[in-house]
Image (tube, rainbow, N blue to C red; front, side, top):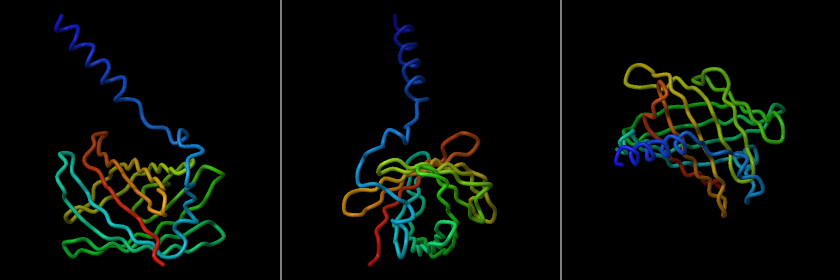
Length: 176
């Protein structure tokens, strides 16, 4: 009996653990998130990185300037970490169609691909992440959710070799 119960628990865990959230399920939700509208101009974000055990490893602030062009939008991101480290990333993002985006940056391997429905956007990309004198190639499953009053919440799972090594959480606000 105990073996059957254990088998059932493992089976249910595998079944539901393998299902992933679908960005299409947010179709029609409000407020509608349009990446190039939200990030045009000045935006600030406050973020944290937690390791796979839930330990807070880094805290940071990001100042972003979004400039529209014929291709889409360029996001010039300036990071300041609590330990004093500074970094910059420049994203070049273009809208492919009503729901799809593509993005590039110097530390992104290939092309980041995003899909947006309603108030949600899901990015998938591989990054060469700087770590203590070197870099790790990691995969991001990045979710953004626009909330009422213009607050954007971002959660990203970070994986290496298919194993989650941590999670990034950010809150964005337009600067006036």
